[in-house]
Length: 437
Image (cartoon, rainbow, N blue to C red):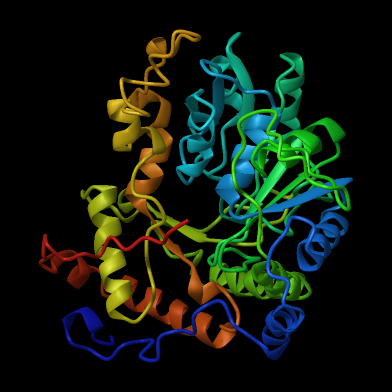
């Protein structure tokens, strides 16, 4: 057996991997187009208008808006849904914090639903129990590049007349029952953060078929004003708004990247499926589950570990830590995306909010009765304890050659499991690497 790199042996993947994103000349030409034009901002700028129209056509909705982040897009959607102080907004316990912050921005109360242990998306079977008369929006999160159980979620939402806002920030181009993500809810939002499948450094996109939501979101993103193209601006804010508009340079770059989104997604899918085929039979390891009625664009590739299936009396958290350390030593970029359920972040544990306990203490609602218990995130906590994620290695320009080296690294570790288990971990070793939003 080959000696583990953890113990001084040669690395399985000594050359590492190429990082995403990859720039090509078309990207540089798009940015230079803006510099040559010398028009850099404005909600009706040519690049911004072009991106919104091209994205609208790509998704297949009647309306699309751009903004400066996925978080801004979420807030625009929550505001457009009419969420007010003291209202409640339901989202998933396994997500990026922005899925909950968007409710706080409206002085509303986030309520969390645990996730499905296989899809990692909001568990639709646990949703209805969290709905009450204060619930004004539901935000399912298409985690790691795959849609939630949207038919079930929409059916429940319609029963209570609650709008659904799909947080599709990680799932550009994915399909659900033959339909593109972005068309599955009253409103859908996407992030263009530099780590996303479609990126421009930072930016966001908002999609809807409903003119009332479109108009409201458009007003929210620009100081609460109604600003129309080719009509003099009144400088008259009708309500609280924000400065969420996009700029021309990132819009131009995003347009360039959009032309090859499907090709880049195909690389991710090919790499992920090849890796799955190569390691799925290793005992104690579970590769991503993709239901037959949808596709994943693999924003992240998450693997779960179960030491009990190897006959080991060791906690899943320690086993994951050891495997993660061994993989990193072999040159495989094993990391973690999120390390705790959202409701276990300090903001929600302490209910600090804006100060004075607001919005939980808001007199317009019953936020003080909202409790964030361990029972509402048990599956999420288990997933975070026993899993790792891959990001860059799945993305272009990396390919099958790299996947072969990753498969070899896994098999090498499994062949040397006794040494992995005997290795003395350094408690100060910062192996809990995570990525940003």
